[in-house]
Amino acid sequence: MSRINNPDKSLPHHLRGAFRGFETALGRYLKPYGIPMSHFYILRLQWDPNGNSQKDIARRAFMSESVASQVIKKMEDNGLLRRMPDRADARAHRVHLTSKGQKTRENIVSDGLRISDENAPEISPEDMKTTIDVLIKIRQGFDRYNAS
Image (tube, rainbow, N blue to C red; front, side, top):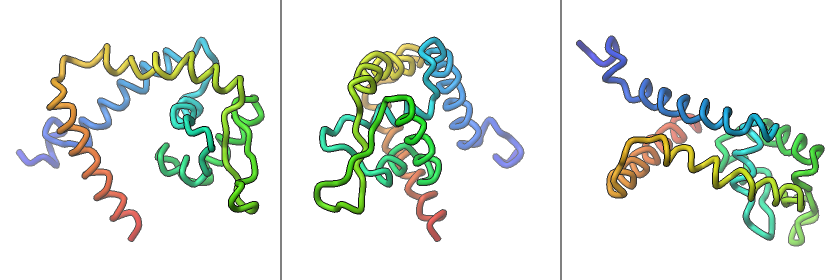
């Protein structure tokens, strides 16, 4: 049986299943905090004291620039982030955590990421490194395809 007809032999099928499992668990974890997953993904990227550009946040959060802009706006409205002019280029803006955003990040990000560690079967550090390396290659291949 070909892998087209057998989802058990399909990498995309298993990637989606693993991601959906994590995302469901993360959603359950975030619900009492009232934080949407899109906010979590951006909060976890906000560690640079110089802020990040919206374009960089979008790229690193695997969001389109328009979606990232909308999420950043909502987070700004909720007092988690603020956009400030870039010191080097006044036309551009850098996104910074507010004190509320910093506290929220400290409260939820490390525990939220721990979900994947605690609920995954034991995977050796070597296997995890190999898995991440392979996933990066897969993503880069799709990035090249999608850019063409």
